[in-house]
Each structure stands twice: as structure tokens, then as C-alpha cells.
Image 1: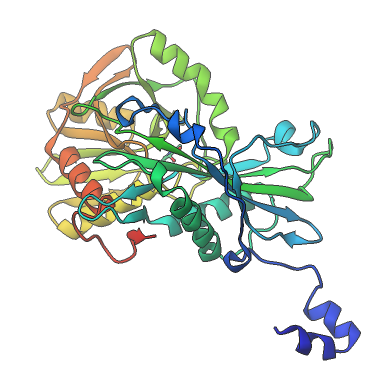
Image 2 (image 1 turned 135 degrees about the vertical axis):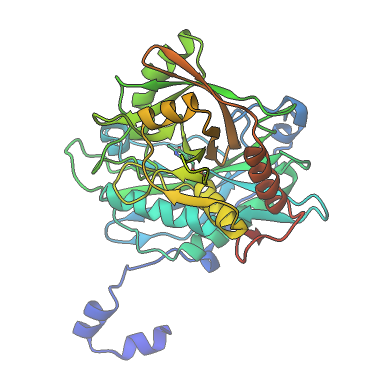
Length: 390
Ligand SMILES: Cc1ncc(COP(=O)(O)O)c(C=O)c1O
């Protein structure tokens, strides 16, 4: 609405229809403050020595939200420490949410790409909403545009080569300096980025799991369907115990019948043959508050359904079902799915004192990995809107 028109409105209407401070995230308002420091990049580890999440690139995106002023103009600034009140409610009540996504340099032409970023934007909004963090009414495309600009500016930080990418970590924290538990009056949305290498440096490294009946990651009506820090801290103890017993990750269960929900910080898939020989790919369904709507999960469902070669079902498998299928030779393969690894083959599941061995790496796991990475790195065209050029 042009300012001239606004000025001509009667005062009362102006306040009601156009709250004077109401602002949305606008990529057109983005300001840049670029660093002159060249040391950070000069000290970056060689690509082959990159470790996940250790090295931060030169710039970050910040956008503040305030109950009265709403979203401020987005800024790209040199990556720097934050200054927040020790009373900020993110630090006390876990009022924070985050995303994990990647920018890729296409193998054929080095163009910069994101993979289904609209899904990450929508999930961030849903995580904020679950925590009653207001300000979810921003246009996800505008935030996406700001993130694209951040990647363009730090283009040299996007490593080139299959498996390499710039990991993007959009994060929102409640900065409200208030020790009461309440919806925050102020928040900071920021995006930091970190160059990462291939999850598997030489072939797949299948994971050994324990199906945990003691610790529960998520439950119906809980927060397992959103990406908030509060879901991850409580998994540390279970993971440490699994590691101490020689297992890499937890297969998360819920309920009396040991319903399978997720694996580690990934969605889980089982490829089974039923008693009449029909093949079925199974993953737990969304909608009950216990399963994160993974971008990789959704992509695998769409891709495998498009092949039309076997049944693809969203339903809860149980541990007794998986154990029986394995005993009867009907468990073909199993894998975790997430942005970090794309797919993680599962070679063993410890359940009720016994190891269930699974063939890894299976053909389907490999095929899913080949297809999704080929789309991410621009080697083949995926469905419309999957590989988004920056
Ligand atoms: C708990 C959990 N489940 C599943 C996933 C996989 O989601 P995505 O495919 O969007 O990375 C992740 C990773 O973000 C996760 O943390």
C-alpha cells in the first residue's frame, strides 16, 4: 500500500486496517554488511578434512521479531556471537526451533541449488506454532529468498563435489528477557551455514541399532512432529548407553506393542515381503504428533510410489512384526532417511536381548540414494520444485 494512500485514510481506519508497525519478512528490505576478514576462509579445513558442524562460513542472516514491531528488515552480517539476556526464555524453557537443509553445487555446471526448501520453511513455521512462538505468518518464499542471498554471498563456501554441500541451519530463539513461562515478546531468527563433506567417505557404513524399550523419543500428542531442541537433548543418555554397548543408534519405540517410530534423528523405512510374497515399503505415518515430517521421507515416498514396483505404505510397523519377518526371511532391507546421510542402511537391530541381522546395503537403499543425490546435484531432473536453483 503506497504511503500516500495510507495518509489519506481516516485515523481510526489506519490503525485498524494497517497497524502502523506490522511488518512481514521482506527480502526486498534485506541489508548487507560484508566482512573484510579473509582469515576465516583461508583457515577453512581442506574439503576432505571437513567435519560436520565445526566450521562456520563468513556470513549469517538475522531477522528480529518483536510483539509490537513484528518482523524487522532482514540483515546479512559477518558471522558473530549473539548477545542475549541470561533471562531469555530460549535458555530456560526451550523456546527455540531449527531446520537442517543444504545448498549444493551442481556437478554438471556448478549452479547453486537447494533441495525442496519450501518443506523446511513450512516445518519451521509448524515448529514455531507448536511452541506458541508468534510471527508464523511470514511468507515462506520471502525467507527462502533471504537464505538464497546468504548462499550467493558465501558461494565460495559451498564445496564442490559429490557428497559435499553447505549445511544451512535456520534457527529461531525466544530472546524475550522474562523468567515467566509465556509466549515470547521478542525472537531472533537467524541462519548460519557450515561446509560439510560426504556422510559416507568410502561406501555406505551400515548402522547397528538397539530397539529401546526404556527411553521414549516421542509419543502421540507430543512434539516429535516438530524440529525443536527439546526433542534432542533427552536422546543423549540413551545414545550414550547404546554406544557403550556397541550400537550406533537407537530405534525408537512407543507403546505396549513396541511400535516403531524413528531411528536416531532420522525417519525409518522397512522393505518387507508379506506372507503371500508381495513386497512392501513401510514407514510410520504422520499426523499423530510423533513422527517428524522429513523432507527425505516425503521424497522417498513420492519417488518409490512413482516406480510402481511394490506397495508403499505409511503405517506403524512393530518390533514383533519386524522380528518375525526377519526370522521368516521376509525382511529384505531397512534404512534410516534424513538430510545428513540421505539414507543410512541398517545392518542389525538388538531387540529383547537378541540381534536381528539385516542385509545391508540392499539394492533399494542404494537405488534411493543414487536417485535422490542425482537430483540434489543436478545430474538428473527430479519432480517439479525439488531442485531449486539459487
Ligand atoms: C528426529 C528426526 N527425524 C527425521 C529427520 C529427517 O528429516 P529430513 O529428511 O527433513 O532431514 C530428522 C532430521 O532433520 C530428525 O531430526
